[in-house]
Every structure is written in structure tokens, then in C-alpha cells.
Image 1 (cartoon, helix red, strand yellow):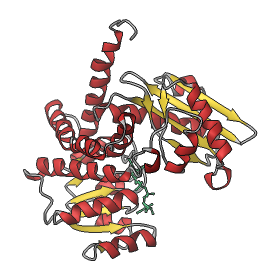
Image 2: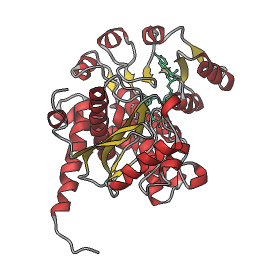
Image 3: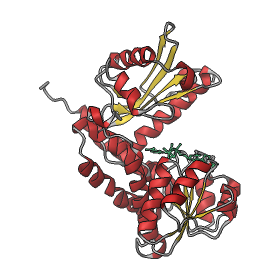
Image 4: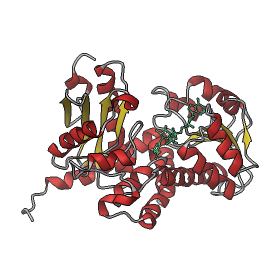
Length: 358
Ligand SMILES: NC(=O)c1ccc[n+]([C@@H]2O[C@H](COP(=O)([O-])OP(=O)(O)OC[C@H]3O[C@@H](n4cnc5c(N)ncnc54)[C@H](O)[C@@H]3O)[C@@H](O)[C@H]2O)c1
């Protein structure tokens, strides 16, 4: 990366946090606070270079602004990365040192769990910092955010079915779920409950076994490639990013793509290829915002019912995305960006109206 100011030209603030004694090297990126304090998880990952870490945190924090805006939350977008292998580097002292850096931002950035960090880590960070979500249930937190992430994806899928087939029912539809980890597993449950025929794939035999134990009717594909090539009505990528490649678009028989994974489209332009093949793509950050909704609810004192009610709104939001896509003649991924940008602009503008301090 040549220049962090060029790479993060849209970002408000990028903070490098250093504590040699504990080995902490973190980068916190605040993309936008147009709608409220930036919220996003802390990823703990052994990046090959600092430049890789910076690029990742810039991309991820930008994505959080769009996700929060489209979900109707009064939150901006931020994200943090801690550079290193969590298995060897993570310690109470490091997490608390990181917490003090987050605290120094005075509430402009709230953290949460991400790859490599867990609710118990958030409890450690919170010993030094007031701006932490994703905490354990014992500490008033929302616990595992994959519950409402899966629920939201299910709502998005019902909305996509409404556009594709004239009604939200998934009864009898063949749904391929690639990746049955935390989110995929819960999604399979929702699908089985409404009578969908579910086929799954995973690279982890234990994850597949858990699904087979709970839902004996679920079929297992030999591989994710085999799943993609199978006769499907819906394809739900719930593993890693970049799942929708040119080859996958060519191969898919599914009418709908709707899954939990972040950054599903392998490169810009894939959204057009999907449209040309008549595949309805439910934008990833639109349908997977249930987890963000769940942890954001902690800021008001967590209520599962209230958070679930808000996540139910993902059905209507996804429909609005498809409606705007049809009206503007653009793929749904572009329509989602337009709706999110519109809200950041129209609601964010109100902060320009001066009010006396409370
Ligand atoms: N957990 C959340 O609340 C949440 C919220 C928003 C988005 N997401 C995204 O959803 C996705 C799943 O998240 P998760 O929390 O369930 O993660 P997870 O790690 O629990 O599950 C991912 C699963 O995918 C499997 N996998 C990896 N490569 C695969 C491949 N090539 N084919 C099939 N399976 C493969 C893994 O073995 C694992 O079982 C991730 O992309 C994550 O970023 C999660």
C-alpha cells in the first residue's frame, strides 16, 4: 500500500495502537460517524504484513457503515484488527492494553467480537473500556450473535422468494447451505422448520456431523463445488468471503443467492454477471445484519425480543432493495449501496443543525 491517506481517503480516522510489552499491535479504523458512533468487531489475525492489516481494516470498517445504515441503526462504521496469532499472542494484559486504546477514543468507536475474538475477550477489554458490545450473557451481553444473523438471512431469503416466486414460502425448495458453522447451523434449522429440502457442505467433518445429528433429513454434498453444481433453488454461502466467483455464477442452477458470508462477490462486476444469468442476489450486508442488530441492542440494555423484532425487518429491507433495483435498473448490490448512502446523507445531514448542549 502506497499511502494510508490514499487507501483510506473516505475514512474519518485510523488509529495505530502499540504496546510492545504485551505485543499489542492494533489498527482501529473509523470509516464514518455520520449516523452515530462507529461499531464493528475486533479481528485478531496473523496478517502477513502491516499493509495487509491496514487494507483489511479499511475495507471492513467501510462495510460496517453500509451495514449499519441499511439496517436502520443509529451507528456508524468502524472495525479494528489486532495483528498476530490469537492462539499464542492473546493475553489478559494485551486485551486490556487494547481496551485502554479503545477507551481513548471516547466512544467514537465501539468494539465487538469478530474472527479470533470471543465474548470472554470482550469482558476483558471492558475492564478498561466503556465502549464494548458482544459481551457474555453473564455481563449483560447478547451472547452468540450468529442466532439473529441466521434469522436475518432466513428473512432475506423469504423476501427473495417473494420476488422470484411470488410468495415467501420456501416449502419444498432445495436450498444449498455452504458452511454449517455457527450461522449455517442455525439457518439449516429455520429452513428445515418451513419444509425446505436442505443440502449442506463443509470442510469440517465435525460441523457436518452436528447438522446430521440434529436434522437427519439434511443431505450432505461431497464438496462445496459439488453443492454449487447440484440442482438448487437457493444457494446460501455461509463460509468465507469471495464465494461467488465467475465459475460459480456459470455453474449455479439456483434462482436465488442469499447467505451469511461477508463480501461474497469475488470482484466488482460479478453482480452484473449474476443478473445476466437471471440469478437474484440478496446483498450480503443487507441480509446478514442480524448479528450487528443483536450486539447493537446491548447499548440499550439487551432485549432479545426487541432485537429479534428489528431483525424481522430485514425481510422488508431486502424487498426495498429489490424494488429500488428494479426501479433504477441496477443490480441489487448497487441498489443496497444507494439506499445505505441515501440514509447516511439524509439522516447524517441533520447533525449539521446546531443544538444547545444538553
Ligand atoms: N457470526 C455472525 O454473527 C456473522 C455475522 C455476519 C456475517 N457473518 C459471516 O458469516 C460467515 C459464517 O460465520 P460463522 O460465524 O458461522 O463462522 P464459523 O467459522 O462458525 O463457520 C464457518 C464454517 O464454514 C466452513 N468452511 C470453511 N471453508 C469452507 C468451504 N470452502 N466450504 C464449505 N464450508 C467451509 C468452516 O469449516 C465452518 O464450519 C462468515 O463469512 C462470517 O464473516 C457472521
